[in-house]
Length: 247
Image (cartoon, rainbow, N blue to C red; front, side, top):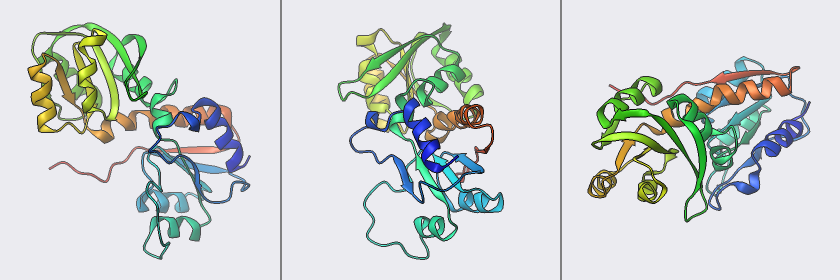
């Protein structure tokens, strides 16, 4: 099997043409015709991930966040792209298309939280969020539940009962304005600014900040398993490590 074969499968499940317009997804570095025997699946393509790929004899790195996001004007010996090419690696990145797709990041996050009766909610910018139900909890108890299942010190505003929940992995604080119109009591997301919390509270919506990494890394193991089931002659290694520490 080749890099292209693996991309074709991922594209069939999470089509690159469903990614947001600002995004950069697909096979971003490497040889599309190279045979793959081992691959690493990770949230980000960092030097630690590249080193792990080399150590394990991998030919491919599959990431959520694009290894090339904005335009680059040089590829020098202190850059990720240089190290990828030098070591004969390829990189496939599946970002907002993986967020929104069936079995992708938002669906997996709903599963981890324990939401049922999942629905798709389309935002005005066409991004697809997910809505689900949970057995009623107080706003405080729902925060404790999120902290437990996502292993993250949750920040939040909210009072009353939480039953219907809107979910957006990663940076989705702006979508709290969609809660009331879609019958939701709360939004679970990350990268929430101070004013987002205040605005949500003013509008009577519970808003939970659960960490960018923690709301997205949940997809890595399921994605790895999906790939392993499809390509049983390739070894897929899940990397769920974060370089970001909390004191």
